[in-house]
Image 1 (cartoon, rainbow, N blue to C red):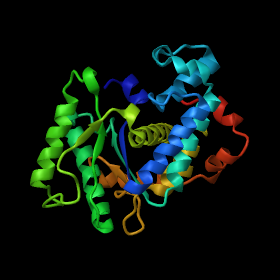
Image 2 (cartoon, helix red, strand yellow):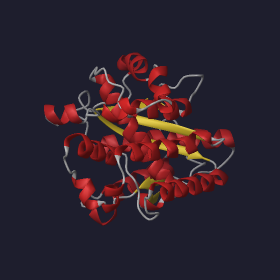
Image 3 (cartoon, rainbow, N blue to C red):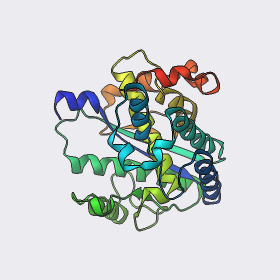
Image 4 (cartoon, rainbow, N blue to C red):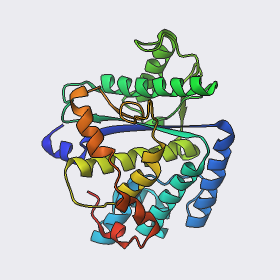
Length: 288
């Protein structure tokens, strides 16, 4: 990555959520209802990055390519899009059992790591934590990942399946065997999976939130209240600690962990309170 790319994309972030099977339907019914309310067709998804498209269009008159590809966006303004995302996250927050894990790579600090290594480390960290959660709950989990479909010209679907199968069969340095995961990775089309759509919101909000924190911008952008109200309270903990358990640096960098914990996991009650107050500042504050 060059300096411009690192400024725009300082982190590679992946997110996972673990919920009980009997609550999955509650999430789906709730999100389907919200789509009808906001005029979003049931067979499409609203992606986190559409918020940026809508904001740019309203603030700067720039018609982002996402609006051209997704006609229904012309019927939604930024405020409606933000309300849809926050309402979906509220449904997740209200579920009785839900656990969020975020893994992140600081791209500047890890320039020499290969793409394949980063992919494997992220997947492995999520698999490990889902395995631990299922062991505690005495259950088994189906592991679903957003597939790349026909546009997968880099072979990412096959690469992730190969990594998953190898880890499942052989274990790793922390787990001799994965006993609480299904033996096959499920690659899903995100438009048909409410869980993957929620994971997209989580990863997108976390990435934007961390970017602004890292670059020291004094701005309560729209990612901050989503992260602090709905993501942070539901991050996985171990021994009352989120860092390294539900918020995981990849690869592990013990020298940076305490700084990352202070910078990204210190909650700001003002940002969270914006969700229940007049949110005009959210719609006019810059995101990027």
